[in-house]
Image (cartoon, rainbow, N blue to C red; front, top):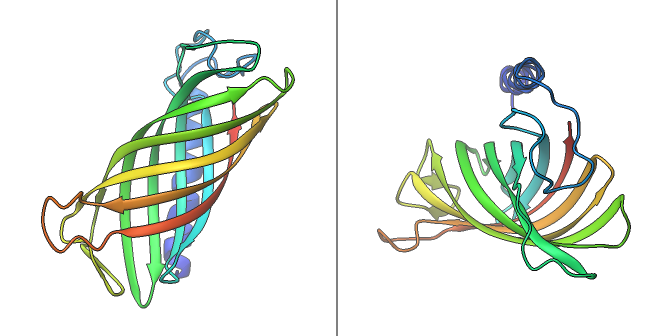
Length: 190
């Protein structure tokens, strides 16, 4: 990644945070998935880094909004989730690819304590990419599905996660090589 691209990514991050801060009351909710007490459409920012088995580096900047509903709540935990929109950059084997994605993610939060909540998550979303080839992979279409399963823990306003992600066109068009990624992320809830 050259210094010009790094500057663009840092500028985009700073602009995103400035716009979010100007967008309304961004005080943190006491717990994930409580009814929205703000008029903000975003309540967290996420940074992630991962790698594919083909040694493609993955960089990810995301904006999240927790669901305002809980389902199947018990003394053990509850089902809820979040929406995540992201800007993505892939770099490997002399190729670069830029993408945007939007995914609904369902998560089961375990009630360990009021401020510590481990969880399991899964979701399927959509993404759009600038290139259809990445290293030895022929993705064939610019539109790809974004599948994920993962685990994480929310500690206060911070969220640490590790997930497996798969990008492919679901065999809408062949070949459909797809890309498998392991990615770690950190999020901060406003």
